[in-house]
Length: 163
Image (cartoon, rainbow, N blue to C red; front, top):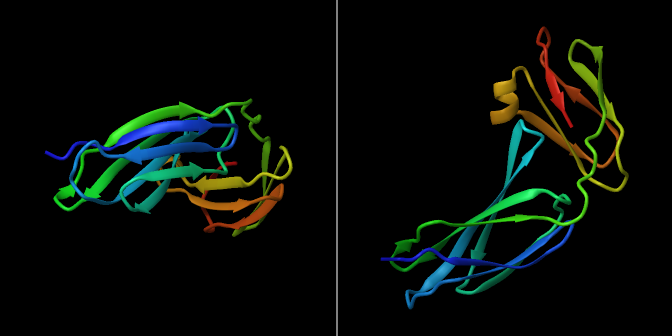
């Protein structure tokens, strides 16, 4: 039986998490697959995937948001097959930034100008869809470090926007 890998949180800060991965077995490990999950607002779950080569691993994941819960899951790729998943949860330190105040204005039938307030020197994600279900499951999206963006949409549709 292949055991799940051990994920150990080494440290965390406002914008990063450092963790180590190891196996408690003599089975040869060729690498790991790690997923980091977090939820934006209550509508959109985000994921970042890392594919790591080698038996032991120290990783640092940066560009995270302060005071946000993250779930890290990992499994090992071994000579006998994939291991079961293991999970850890961690909340980054600091104070979570306030949600931006979004304004969306139609420029014409296929373009919407989105603008918002919020801190400088951060990356914003703009998500939009024609229903709450689509906004949660598979929205259109774009990123920018500016405080406005023009997005192209389909004519004769109503859209929901989230930044």
